[in-house]
Length: 263
Image 1 (cartoon, rainbow, N blue to C red):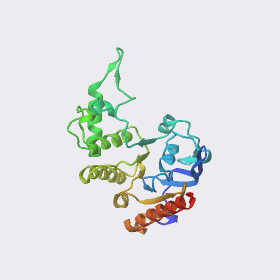
Image 2: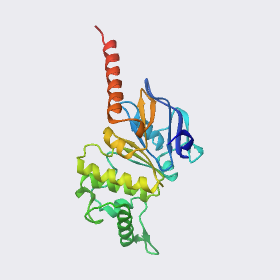
Image 3: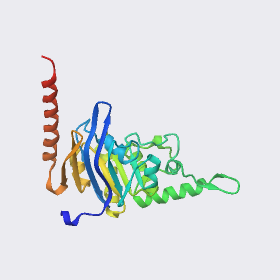
Image 4: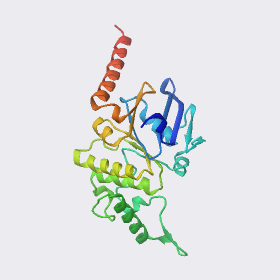
């Protein structure tokens, strides 16, 4: 996709800076996510990826810079504010309740209640959750199964499905494939590809497996020293090139640490 064929932005962050005391986490970061696009965000540990995601989801506020969502400049006040604007985050810890069945996890904080005598409409929630998971191609034993009994890939799929179920327009995926085997990862990769085909959800994916990044993403941004130093289409790069970029960054930082060590 050429510059003139760029999709309209679902979200854009411009000149974002964030400092934690003496530590400069982000320094003049500019990043854009097109509508219906899957953007891979890579970088070594400590590069600022999680800080950037927390700013995009309203968990932290930047010290400087601006956010533009669907063409409107917005100052995100909180995670709830971001959710109201259609931005959801799926973290490694998932924020699912293991002791509750899948259908109740899918309806957390938006439970269906019957009136006039208020009680949970479990049948409605169960049916809605089942229909939604089936529509998305998510396979689990039953929506009545407690989340704690699901595999890691199934739990991650439920967490992503819940974000889509909440009418998210932008989903930020923080290491959704971490510590998963090939079979488990395939569940999430298939789900991301399914959502990509629909083109009504935009995603930012943080991952360390570059083959998976190239398989599912449209573009890749490399975050280095608190800045986006590379913005490339997946067709213009390779696993080898990405590996070399991150390795060179690691070697450079290791060399600088050695230079500063007392002799």
